[in-house]
Image (cartoon, rainbow, N blue to C red; front, side):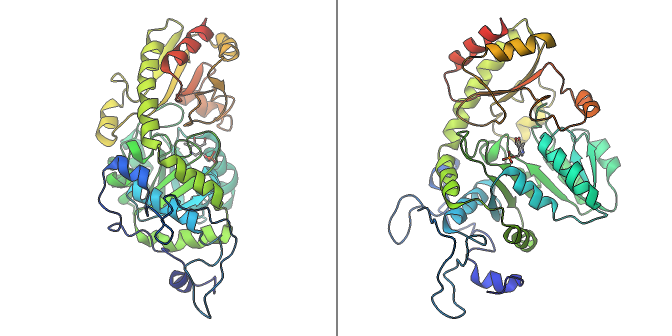
Length: 403
Ligand SMILES: Cc1ncc(COP(=O)(O)O)c(C=O)c1O
């Protein structure tokens, strides 16, 4: 197989050009999550996609292919996962990577020295670090803007602006960006809108419906859902991006292994029920926190008092289960973290176990102090990922730790 020619690869690699959007039977949302893209294996009837634990594939003959040649280009278990994620997001094609950062890194390689990329300023610290410390020195100019301020985004556009990269809701301040309005702005300079959809997942938010071009996931979070697998995804809306992303992905090789692909497929089946329940608990916890005299402020996009509640309602079908809050006194933060018994003091989010994160010292340690201060990432801010434990147990734990 000639690895340098995309046309050649396209002839021999199964589903390289993306999913057949008409192929799966019409299903309601909840059913799609459970049944995935292909359903039972056609040859064996296996209800679940098998784990194809193989590095390479035998060819039937000269210049012939089963559609699989080598697991870096494509693996049947990973392909089913990729097709399922593409289907759920309403995109044409997805690629599964070994982590969210691997997916983001591959996406950033679409840009060249001299390109200008706008980035929503409130975002995961690792993404900021990758952009500013590793890609900026190669000549890509990243400019951090408040993506909730459309006038500011418009003012920042330049003829060489190639993309706008955002999280919505943002991590950790839970600000909501207007995806449709930002899409219209970036299209003025023919740039791409890239949305990190980790916090809400396609169960609650479908950025392609509002004009996004690329959707990113840290699948380590809700898609994996059990704090046990790492994964990442790039999903694209249009087929024009298939060639550059496929050539990058298969050349670099940061792809998700078969067993982790299978575990992620298994997890996605329960994504809807997990998120419904986690969200229900998040609402109860928000009510508790808002009424507590040691809490200054609560940031939750489902709270009608949240400044971006209106936009949130327009572009999502749910609010998720991520809640940030300010404790009134910063000197009480260490004792609060030490006295949590059920909620685990740990980095990450989206799993069945509830996790408490101190963004200043953990997820957002890589963000320069002056930016953190401006955004509100202070020594009083905590971020809670609400898991699947009984909400009353979580509330009792918070109450005890707050003292
Ligand atoms: C919003 C968001 N995007 C991307 C990432 C990076 O994903 P990973 O940790 O899977 O590499 C994270 C990690 O916390 C995240 O919170």
